[in-house]
Image (cartoon, rainbow, N blue to C red):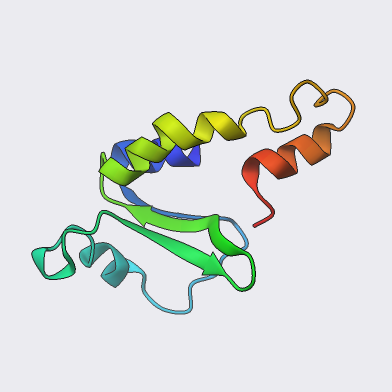
Length: 99
């Protein structure tokens, strides 16, 4: 649901355990500006793990987020290919990510 809400409305998504140490408004102001090559999305990186879905920001109807939702997200919907019944918690971890 996080992807669809941010895709539709735009803004910042952060997990409940993310605590900003300063105002996050400047992050939104940097999106979709000519001086920033009209970047439409910001994604956080977790040390040694890569990109994370715990914190990201996007403009409404971002092209890159729309492509992710349309093409990449369905490939993660059923990571255990039928074994979800046996390992439901592991299935959630694989489909949403550890961070």
